[in-house]
Length: 483
Image (cartoon, rainbow, N blue to C red):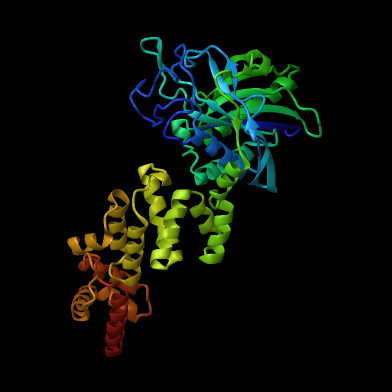
């Protein structure tokens, strides 16, 4: 195994976040009943003519600009002919000869340091429908809601050498596209999926081996397992004297293996020819300049600025900028309450914990920056204890509750009445003579136990700073009296 290296290139399909499809006015919303977002154009009816969605072109160009690509000012669409039940026209409108974007690259972090992965091209095309296989009735059903949803296909150079590099590349790509607002890149919903082209060769060899393609992988875990399995399979074939056949394979993540779908097609197998129903796409320099001016601050720049402007440590900046939703929440809340590190702590602590427990992604967060800033202020001022603050934040997380109003309605404000606290602490001291004796004998950990008992007696509402101060004072007094 160590004598070989793996060579990997990716074809990443990304559904663009337009409200309507690429060549018709049907909605692109995910999750509708089957076959309700359809019309004669996206179901391939005879005589129906496509009309290009301008917003899809702008999104595609924005991704190309962010990936350092040359934007083709004059590009065309082509017909890619193939027959499959989820392809209603029996061809796909795509770009082969004159794609919109060429010759880009993005930088990724690897174990060996920074690495550049080349992007051969980014072209536009339409998505196919979706087949639903009913094994019980032994039938396959077709949902054409997805047919005609605008796609970009990002074709990398074969520059990656491991599953870790692949996932780093995909993560960087996903973050860039999410920051642009060009797609939500939800792998679980199919709005981002990858085809993996993989070959192996002996280390030090310049010539590429025979590649196979694994189609439509839609999770980082599945991609990692598929790459490791396919590399092992190909090396095993070569070591046993066999040959690798160029083919398309399907990865079965449940079984942990792949199987042959068909022999790998080349461009001529699809009988490409220019799309006769669409005029060329001409991007003026003025139009391109407008798109460039709208480009947002991307993750790398934002991470650097958060460390400089807000004084965040590297770890905080890395985690928060990993999601545009988290970054937007952080920035807005920090500007409201002027406590950036404490906002960061709430996002990285309670927010991440609740996201994990609920099985949600950061993009599904519903609470506002205003309510996040309020919870930071409440906890920082001592108006509520940390325990109560976490209880209140759970309501903020689930329902975007106003934390100030919630604290008032539930009577959760911290008790700062010194006379009342002294009365309760006196009872706690009287009720736990062993802990008091431990304190007298120099075991100062006993204070922690007594603080806990006081907080319990006060139902978690006592001001913990005042409790500590009064408790130590009363214990010290009793200690002097004891002597």
